[in-house]
Image (cartoon, rainbow, N blue to C red; front, side):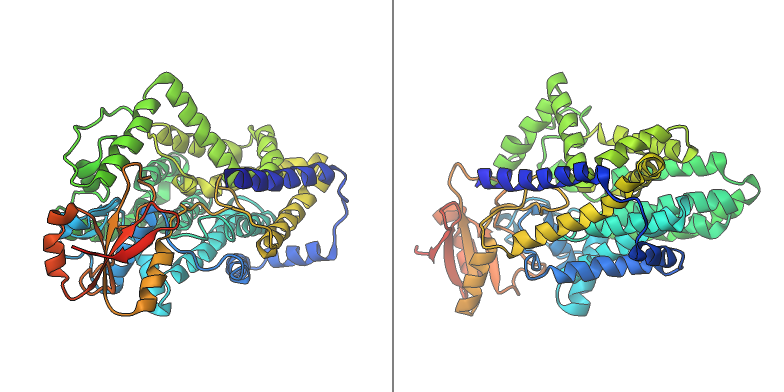
Length: 545
């Protein structure tokens, strides 16, 4: 299986690199479609067109990339939030038998809720309420993301270049990435970053308070999706606005921003109070204090190990998280960690086809625009260098900055090799066609890791298959999940709906014959199963006392 992943992913990368080499002799003349796109670029509705393009393309590949099933801890946590919000609650009361349901990335005290900020859950809840499918919320969010990137780039570049950047975002981020094919996030933080970064040049040119309000709205989105990275980026943008913005309109701009930030802050405080017990308690912090030994920042010492009732939680927090955290605190481990972050970022955002524009962007370092992008990216990079964990959605607030550098690079390349610039979108389309063809082929392949424009990150878990099997039996079920001592803690089955007792299937941890007695009495009206989760395939059998 690992060989298949390696072979297919390298095949895609080699194809892309070969097309880049061929593009050196690409024709330089304009084509009729290019002229039509120039006319579209100047229209005010161009960002909307980009957003619709992304949504249509994602719908078009549903036959080979269907509505995703959650496999990652974080996805289940966000879906818990969505289920909670869709039922009109901010949090759920703690279940009397909550210790049987303890799991990663979820709170059980003082309430039963997701550990994450609420915005991702609210978007998924909107999908549930309006369509019955949580993924519909992410589908719309990805379209809005691409539209917001196009809008933001129009603040920095001529409309044609902004349209090109938005279209590249639709193709490279909006179809096959895990941002577009999971419940994990990325799109919402990219929207917040786009609003914040796109408002900056407009405010610097005009000083209008409405752009300060748009930037503040972007900051609010960031704080409710990627709080740490979003706050750093917001402060850096605010610093530029204060130093370079029109002084005579600064008071109105600050008031406009406060009109957005203050009510949003009050709502966030209310949410924190209802869910975590205190207006000043941040999402994520309660869970980390309760379960984690590894810390959020590398300069923090490991916390004392708590008592874990379940081996799976011990293995996740002690055997999986902690060694990586301790390694990252050593000089060699820190270098490996930072190298890994850079490689993952290049694989996801850039790839072979966008490498030349990225390198060419540094030719333009004298440009004030380029220096602004680099300053803001440096602020984000410095912030992320202090934390051990990373996936590409951690850098989502900076998406439009990366795209801005790519557009700068393409503009620089256009002066020397205009054929390459015209070839880049063509290569992206050709690679998209190749990826679609792979999806329709009968050749078995796996496209999960590494995370690139063509892959969706997921874990090889069979929870969805077990769920379908139980649904086919009808009735109400209690599944007691049993793991072997060598269980991989990333392959977790114990996640439940917001209203556990009303669920058709309740998932619980095996606490031994004596420990399971109260669970069996409480759910005596359900069919009880034991799931041997580590067998291949997992084995579901009736529970026998």
